[in-house]
Length: 514
Image (cartoon, rainbow, N blue to C red):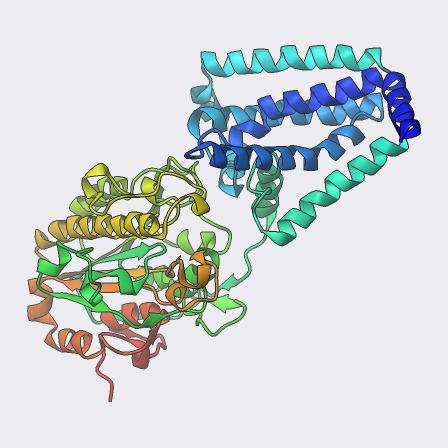
């Protein structure tokens, strides 16, 4: 034991400057880059903070091996570590100040933004950040030159290999634990940006027409709303106080999808792809079909466009994204009501037929950021991002408050449609549901019944009711049927009575079935 202590003491004395330099590099890296991913996380109590303190240590440990390797040669340090540190510090600045999410959407903006737009982003705080970063880099370089040359030592190599491998072990155990944080999210953001679409869009339909004229349709794509927490479907809480009082509202309690995360479910909702298709090949966008039939199409979204459905969305004539630099993982995401401003503006000025799609952030975690104080109906609510620190009742209260907010959101759209002279209807469909403690599971992306049963609601105007009595009869007739989310595509086409394009009326909620 004494001999081991002597060896460690001798090793430390021999490599003291090198060890202190590595410690300094990691401390500076935490302060300038790593810590930025944690400052906006809502936590409550010392246990939560201790847990996330350990989380930061694990993240930085997984990076320490790469930092060591970047110091083994002066040109590696100058051409790899220094520019990476500088670039990542700029990403971290925006994360610190704006809680911006580093995803492929931000990478796209950085790589494709015009120089004129870059000018608008420059400010005194940005220049101050750059100045401080350059100053620190100069100091680190001076320290580095004083301990040159650095020799490869077995203990450093072993620790570095263990640190690098730890990232893959942790991610394999629990996905997105580290890779959603800086600096890994930059790497994966670039990777996603370069990724090709997993499908080919068929845009050669031939001559197709619509038998329906003068119709305004609003398609609202929800997020993480389970059908059984809707008052309209018999839930014991008043989560839909506004819609419950409205006429002409039909809710579908038995919709299902095996795809319990957005990137997989949404492409199958807005195209002719089926939930039974394991992979996507050649698909048709519902927006392309509507455009062919002289419908104006608009997409207004509160989520970044993921590679799995970005190209599909861009088949709309107009695409507007609000708060595009914050992902669903942000704790400061814009509220969905901000979608209503561009929607109402476009709706009021549009002449002729129209399909307006609003893509919500909905009930996606963190629930407390998805509604206003006015809609905090059920209490107590969650006060920590760390789920073990809150009760099941708190989780369900916060989640149900997001449904109350959804009720308000849809009611606001209906108020706009009621003023429309032409027949109009609203179709709401969530991409998937959510687990709320069943079998100890929370959130989505899991194989549970609650995640596979998304909410679906249809509202229609009095003018729509007068003009299409058969469609209303079908809506009522189909409300209790077991329906896949495939019904959205086929119902939309059946709604405007497409001619010259094959679709399945058997999958339409607007058609009567035996």
